[in-house]
Length: 219
Image (cartoon, rainbow, N blue to C red; front, top):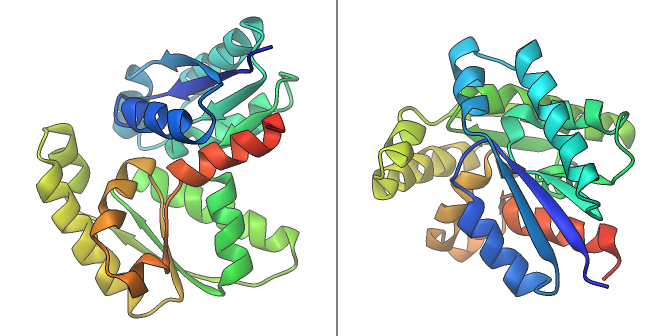
């Protein structure tokens, strides 16, 4: 029987990226995309996750379970902490897109840089890293950086300018840390332009998120 995976999106940025990754890594899986781009707009406007956002997100997790999917991938890291709440409500396995990436980061490094294009993603990612480190009894040092204007350029269609800004900040950050974590899946696009040394020290979430889904599905 074909396995089904629901992807819960708060924007369009990773729809095609994840579709292509699933086709490459687990092509047999049927995807169900649930997308509400008003969620991220509200998070940005309110500078954080609000009660209405939590309620709508929970309704989407419940809808995914109603579709009888075998796993759910929470795509947006800005609302990743809502997935923790949803795990107590729905029985379908929920994977956060940055679960595997943050696991790898805390296992490999003590000094970790976190780069984001949105402040609303920066804080939750840092909290997730701290939580993962605490779970294995490890102390980590986090250095944060926000890439000014990059997200706005990406949303306006200027992906080249987005990549230039993020790359500049990542290179600067890499000089003072062991590993750099890209807090948003939409930032993963720049990794192909990294030199071999820096490529090994920069972690992004889309591919590892799909690999984690594959692991959960047992295929």
